[in-house]
Length: 321
View (cartoon, rainbow, N blue to C red):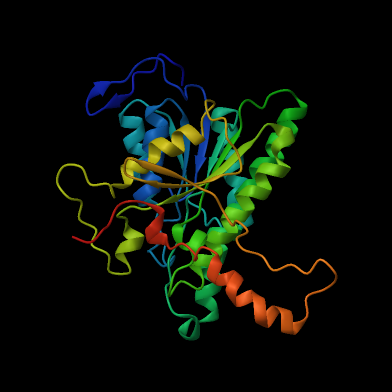
């Protein structure tokens, strides 16, 4: 694809000066919901897209080629370039196959967007080991595997002088950044992704890679599995999943200049997550803290510190009403 490709948005051609023209983007979980919107947004901005989707249910069961194929067809219908890949991101073979497809079809990889996910919400005492492992595997292991596979390609590309503005955009969650009741699998998986993003930004910096993550909130199929109303309001609904993708397109594009950060993204809102900060402290300058010192002073230090934030405090919108 070049900058002269005529891509359509709502039936009208976009500008020829497309900011992602000539780039190749790999997007996991791109068959439905937020991932689908990412794929369409990257294509509209000029990028060729490898559309990965296992096609499973919200809990990760089952599988179908149809979601990924439909998105590829949509992109091609508007004049873009896309190819489907149907693998399970928790399988190491899937990540390697995505890389091979991108290189075979388009000759390069510029951006990796890790979006694939599933939900199996239960309280800790009621959660089966299989439910814990499934969510950890798809979210955290899947992010690791694709990052490693693409990173190995970029390492070789850098040596050959070919890597140009490589970018990674991962998907964390307010549940991962702040914790959430009933998500003893999903919250640690998403927290791990936020930490993994920071590690990636440090380790991949010498290759010129910028790595960031978003904590999106939108009305999608996954939230529907836990009883959240999915109908979009008429007019502007801040929870429309399409509104997430412009931020991801920028983070995944050559104009991005930040790395190692997490962002809350909802509707017309982006908030920079500042991570753990040290509040009040307990210090004994003359030696180790004794049990008695801790018992006397730590409760006050906790009381003097800010309370933990909640997912709902990460953005100004509400799905209620």
